[in-house]
Image (cartoon, rainbow, N blue to C red):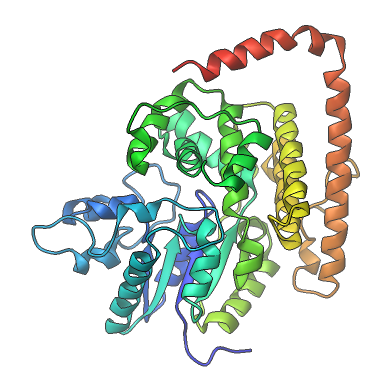
Length: 425
C-alpha cells in the first residue's frame, strides 16, 4: 500500500545503533523537519551557544557529517534570555519499561504534539529521532497512531563495543553509565527487578538524594563504572537492551535492522521501498557504512561473554513463558543474541557476506540472496534453530570448563576479584 501523503516518522533507537545516520537520511529531504532526540536531558537547559556547539565534530561521535548542529531544528523555539525548550521536562529523559501509561504522559504528549505543529507550520513533515523511547513504545504507538513508528535494531555486542570504545579510549563514560542509572531508577518495576536478578546484577546503594533525578544518578554511575569490571557493565547494558527492546517487534510498524543494512545492498534497497510505502517519504540509505573487519575490544573475553548471552537467552525464554514478552520478541532477541555471539567470538567480519558459512559457526541472520526474495519465514525459522543449537553447544563447552580442575581451583580467586571490583567505590 502506498501512502497517499507523507506521515510523521518516529524513529525509536538505542544508543550507538547508527540511529543518527538513519535520521540524517531523512533530514536531507526537502519538506522534512527532523528533530534530534526530543527527550534528551540537555534540552532542559540548552541555550543558543550550547545548541550551536553541539555538532558531530564536537566530540568523538563516529556520526556522519551533518550540515547543521544536532538540535538546529529547535533553535527557533528558544526564548530570548531563557534556557531550555518550552514544554520540555527533564523527567521525559527517563525511559520506562512497564507497558502502561508512563509518568508525565499528558505533558509528554503535549510537548511532542507541539513539535508536530511546529513542523507543520514550517511546511514540513516531522521526523523524530528518539533515543529514550523504546521502553515506552506501546504508549507512543497508541498516543500517536497516525505516525509511522520505526524501531531500529542492532545486536547488543556491536552496540556495546562502540560504547566501551568511547569509554576506554576517550574517557566518555556516558553510554556505559546510563544503563546503570536507568535500571536504578526503574528497579521498583517488577520486570526490571526480574531482569536484574536473572543477569546477576547487584546495583550499589546510592548516596541520599542521588536517585531523585536521572542527571544526579548518572553522575554517580560515571564514577562508579571507573572501578567496575567491564563484564559487570556489559551485564547492565544487556539488561537495559532486553528491557528497551521488549516491544520493538510487536508495537513498531517496522524494524530497521542496522546490522543487515551495513552489509546487504539488497536489504537497503528493500528498506527504501517499504519506507516509501509506510511513510510517503523516500530517503536514500545508499551511504550506509559497513562495520568493516577491524577488531574492537569489548573489555572481557569471549568465553565470559558467551556465558552472559546464554543467561540472557534463558531469561528471554522465561519472560515469554510468563507472558511478559511476545514470541515475536523472543525471535528478535534470539536472532540478535546469536549475532552478538558471532561478533564476540569471530569478530566484526562474522556478519559480512560469506560464500559459505563454516559449519562450526552459528547461522547468520538472513542470507543476502534471500533478503528480498521468497521463503523468508522458512529461512528465519532455520536461523533460530541454528542459533539455539549453536548456543546449546557453547553452553556444553562452558559446562566442561566449569568442571575442569583449573577452573575449580581458581573459583575462589575470581569471586574475590569480582567482589573487590563491585565494592571499589
